[in-house]
Length: 357
Ligand SMILES: Cc1ncc(C[n+]2csc(CCOP(=O)(O)OP(=O)(O)O)c2C)c(N)n1
Ligand SMILES: [Mg+2]
Image (cartoon, rainbow, N blue to C red; front, side):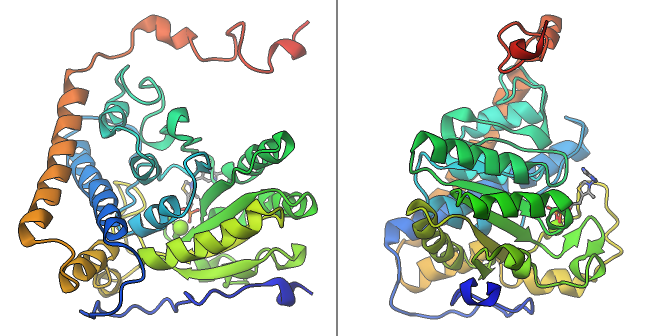
């Protein structure tokens, strides 16, 4: 029975938000861990606040989907996984590589379409990619990364590695039919994939409630008896804890886990979104439980850092972003011959030759 295999994490939360409280408690994680969470979430936030301004100034074009508000999801995932694990996500892809350690200069240069960008200036905001840190992209087709991610995870199982692949997608993407085919095969073959719904309650302007009779997305794997958890995505510790638990199962060969991580994006779907589908009060409720402020609150309440040390971290983040902008501005555009590189016509492009004759 599906119900029997479904794990409901202790981290379960209702969508209703609550204001951050200053609580002095016994810390569950080390000082280093809290500082690392603060630094990585803050760097993502600062990078995107600047990217948003630069976009408005028309310094770069194309699409630009901001992750602001959702930072705890990727930072809690990365802190709980191994360096050799792989991650894939959708077009809202700035946060993942930053959390995974990609140099922000390569990412800002990618936004600017420069040759020094992580995808040589050919991908832009939606197609960040960094093989060095095992970030397998940035994907623009809604839900495309679900079967692809399962394929990546299958490759690791086939090769006998103990890597896990984290496949992140939105609540809108969760309605794609490919999810069901993928879940079926993933459970049949017990592949080491962790499926993460970054459930921010909206697909563009369409709320979860308007897309299906089934509004509890953690149930989507029930027909395949896929274990699942509902996780508070506004609290980085909760995400970390859930990912640790899911990884244990996946690494010991028990197969995939579905995490319905409840989060929120503070900004519009992309840069041009009048946001008529939600109220300002709703946005404020989530901003009041901001994951970065929560971690900073824990750091302050427990005196993990001095005020000077906190300011130093904030200056570091601003400086990293300023350096990234300088690098992007000073970098060259790709030359015309780049058009013919990294494309299917290339002789040694993987898999193509076997089909030509
Ligand atoms: C196959 C496909 N259909 C439609 C679109 C247009 N589109 C881009 S983003 C989006 C909404 C997806 O929402 P969700 O999966 O919840 O992700 P979020 O934007 O909230 O991160 C849609 C419909 C697309 N890119 N690909
Ligand atoms: Mg969504």
